[in-house]
Image (cartoon, rainbow, N blue to C red):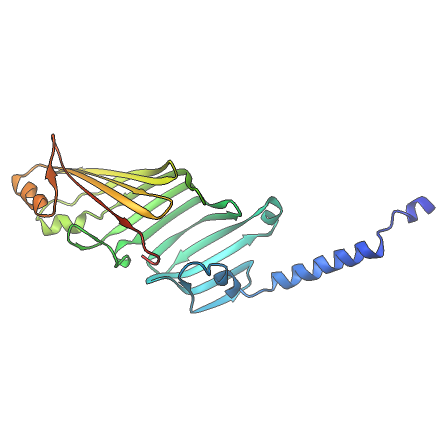
Length: 254
């Protein structure tokens, strides 16, 4: 009997367990607005927050000048035992819609099992072929992992009709672009291509860890007048195709 009694937890251990339980309850009841505060390094604002930091909603969230709409999230509590935090998130009612699973650790952040659609017109700070961006960008993300060193893993399918507006201005046929994204030397590389009755096009966008980008575009117009129009936009004729290269820096909230 004495041996059994000696195995009872000490008062110090009981106090530690009690303190942990009390602290967990306080954290579990923390307002969802604390989730927005965790993004203090970026231009994230919300009209209001409901629920808790574990299971809540950020209403009318905005990243810089882009209206994200409502962001619903649910943090998996047991994921904290593995050195990070995993949450299921959903965006609706704004420029971005979709859902996926986000995991954040001290080493970086990853997105898995996600699908999204983004209204390119919301990125008002950028233009393409002499006019503001128009159209949609859709994606299916099986994996996207980013650390301080940049992109380390990407398995993404992409689709966009970003060329629909320029095609209309040039009296050309609509053209959808499809492709994917991968990582190379820390940069996120996205390559998209498509074709129509008026020819073919290919876009390659590279985003470096310092958030600078390069965009290389090539086109093979099927009509001479389209070639002349592309020259007016800065394309130059190469062997078998016309091309243009652009570079710059991505700005927060774009």
